[in-house]
Image (cartoon, rainbow, N blue to C red; front, side, top):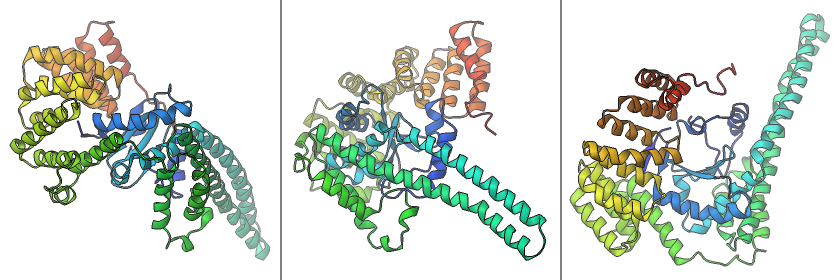
Length: 474
């Protein structure tokens, strides 16, 4: 199910040219480590989709394995932003923009991006940046204190000599800031070069071509070719584009897999992903131009079917989706799409059979499980709600920071008349969304409905007394 979830709006650092302002974001992350996933992602326009998430897992699994990270449960988080961007903000997630997914024409291009970001994770760059930041800040603070002493001395002196001393003192106050920025940028440029090298190494060890990674960075370099003469290389968080491309080309072309192509089946899945995103995100006229009626390929039919359902042609969309399912009966995501279209158009009972089948074909796809539960709850049948509850309990156990799962769980418990569990699930949803005030209010009400000391009462009490790790920073 492709849907938007609004769980701090971090300012993502662009893969091509992360600017000086990124240091501010890096400082904030370093100073305030989150205790829950939502503290990292709150406010980001996150997209959840079972099909795309599975494809990206398949892209990253071999890379993470050779990098020694396969047991760390690294998640790929999709952000609804049209710019080409990927970044890491903690040691557990790689964030990637929709723009990167749609603009990468081949799987290899996207896999190259993930290989680079995995280089950051494997190198422990975030932790090392925090250490470097602490060292740089200490040096800067000492220098600033020395400058403050000079400024005070200048202020208390008289005459020209005193004025000159004061000016030197004030200059000494601002100089450490400049040194701090240059030091951290230099350190970050070194990390980017290391991530490039690690990315090529991971691709070679998995028998994949580094050409896609090279092509991506070359495109960035070509886009900035006219800006390069006006760029101060010492105020960039990345190596200069052309220098980076030249170094990457020399390294990448030594790979024995340079000319290796993506398997056709993988390319088809990649094309289906791009078509799906276009169908959901683009205007219908854009979809029609990109995937005209004369194009009978599976991705084109997919994009047109999605656009039809999104723009009030449910009957035509269902016919097109049924045709897609007949073309590939084992594809759970065509069935999921049909279920989503029906649920969102008030035909929940009709959505249940295709969603049941989709859940059987993709048993580990949490978004499909939640959508099936949503359809069951929407029937307003207490028996269906009873069936939805275990589905949702499994979903929120696997993903405890998923507001949609908790919201549906609250509705399911409400249909069953279990208002204590409904309040608790609503409190969990508010907590996952970062609304601590509402979470505490709902949890406090839930406590009055549970038996004192019961598991539900204990969990509600945990939420009432929950205190973010950074609550006493200021």
